[in-house]
Image (cartoon, rainbow, N blue to C red):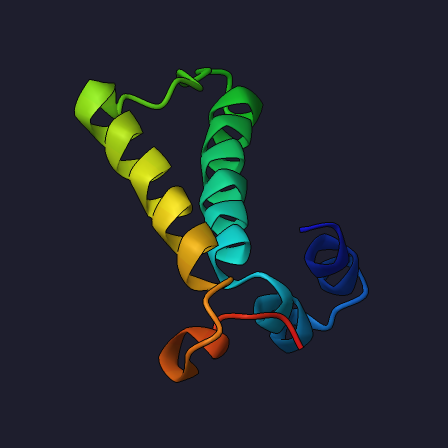
Amino acid sequence: MTRAVYATLEGRVGEAFRWNPLGMILLVGLALRLGWGLVGWVRGRPRSMTLKIGTRGAWLLGGLVLVFWVLRNCPVWPCTLLAPP
């Protein structure tokens, strides 16, 4: 994730996505959420910064991360596409 964030900060988004595709998708979601809160703060009507995903959503997100982690470390062809360069 560190290499992906570093590449993003240098403007190399394609390379960052190759390093960690799931992390970049989650990072975009986090940035959108923080931007939403910042817009509310600037307008004088602060918006809640909590994510209301619930227990089921938390388990789903954790499962997604776990499945991605396992698949990107499998040495068979379709899974090797997820591995970093």
